[in-house]
Image (cartoon, rainbow, N blue to C red; front, side, top):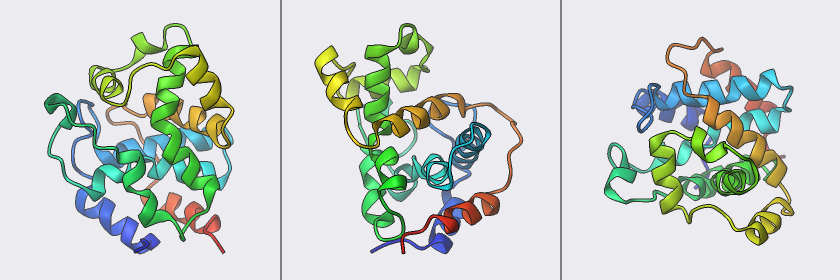
Length: 182
């Protein structure tokens, strides 16, 4: 069953105040900061919406606090897709689906990237398959939506600043409304 934008707002209202595992921000703060970073770099409505919703899968299933500490990969990048399909097209869905693999790609292709990851992000990387080989990295970046996913991943990494002011959720929901599937 597809979510509506009202459902998404309700989900953030109910669970967005939860701590973002191992980081000094809540799930909602992380989502808003990701969207704000995308907007600041001139991303279109679809990519700003993907940035806002990239971790929605964490809110749809409760694995408790810091599942990576217990060796659990929550595959959040896939969990939200069935709920968002029909509401958005691939311009929103592909970056969400690929943002975890984009981390694996960036670790393989960008010197110093791995070292910049938080402890929780390094733990999840190991659970998510680890750093890509050069062949895997090449295959990843050749996929449709991979470049957008890499941009999203960089914003995702930066969106962990305690107390950073952002526009409210309603502002980004309005942007999401503009890129809904026909």
